[in-house]
Amino acid sequence: MISKKSFLFQVLCFLLLGAVLHAQKLDRRASWQAKISGPSSEQIGAVIQSITENSPLEKAGLRPQDRILKIDEVLISSDEVWTEMSYGIRAGSPIKLEVLRGGQLIRSSVLLPAIEKEQHAGIETLYEAVTSVYGLSQRTIITKPKRPGRQAAIILIGGLSCSSIENYPGRNSNWAKVLRDLVEKSDMVVMRVEKPGVGDSEGDCSRSDFRTDVAGFKAAISALKSKPYVDPDRIIVYGSSMGSALAPLLANEFNLAGVISDGTFFKTWYEHMLEIERRILQFKGLSEPEIVRQMNRYYIPLYYGMLIQKKTYQQVVDEYPALSEYNYHAPGHMYGRPVAYYQQLQDFDLAGAWEKVKVPVRIMRGTNDWIMSSFDNKMIIEVLKRNGHQDHVLYEYPGLDHWNTIHQTAKDSFEGNPGKWEENISMQIVNWAREIAGLSTIPVQN
View (cartoon, rainbow, N blue to C red):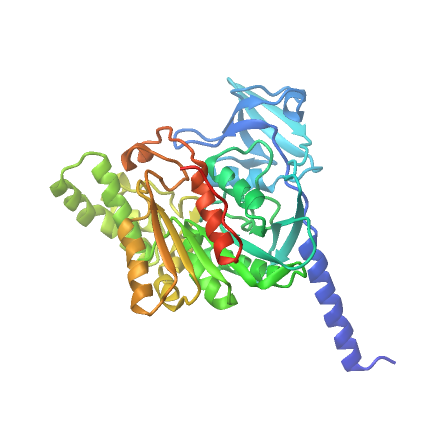
């Protein structure tokens, strides 16, 4: 007869085994094999721009300019819904589509193929998963040089958006180039983790909050430190945008070897958003008296209501209808994330984490980055110096904006004009990581 203690132990083992298996099994996200634009503020539905020849959509009779109204009976009413539904489609599972062509409604069922996994010559690519304390299994991608022994590593912490950190074939943005160079030129293990609902991960990014994101990052770092091929004393955290502000927190908690922050900030999110709105009004050519009037009358009440009083944008506008003309955010979202994300962020002590950093710090900010201010970055250096920190560098990259692109002016970036790429953008990050890890730096062209 099994004792109560033995029985409980077996149940615990079973549950732990189930959790591990659950964490490791993530179905692969599907590929549309088409270019599709999400809903606009004027029209619902996602519009097909182009379709790959002989793809499932083409074989189903769909054409460019068709508008996808519903996926599995869910109306594509906003960009958040489109992102949620599109990311949720898995290869091998048929989906039902309702498509509008002119005035005709077309119903179809398609089976989409898996997105091709990324590959790098001479580098092993491992698709794994971790489960956070919130019970969500999230995709991790680990790349490692093909050699024995423990190696230095980089943990990448991305920005707040619901875009993927996977460098899948055909992705050629400047951010993708940074990812690729980090993997292929650092000669280090590199780990990335997808947010909830992004890539193959469980969850819904459009509803996932700040604490949930942080929990996923922490689960990934814990997993990385346990890998037999990783030197736990030579793990560097590289954060981009929002991830750059989280980098010191994670370095402090996990005793990491160094911090690299790319496009970071220091103040509270309330202060940060007010600075952005002021810059935007200046870019629009408003006079300074008019900027002051709009800031006092509209933008300060708007963000105070959302971030300090913890209301949704819709609640704030309902109480103060004059704000509706100046609020460009969704009723309960900002930049694709729920207002709860930013409300939690507002109460988070990012500046305090910077104050406690002891390991080497490297910060890069573009001189044409209109999202993150130069003053914020210099405040970080002042705080580090004040606390006796000895090894820190702030490099303001000439012409660089927040999206890894060189522009003539910050306004040029704001207006979405084409910029240019420079290899030194990514190599600055690569060489900083190699330097902190004790590896030789790689010569780059000026």
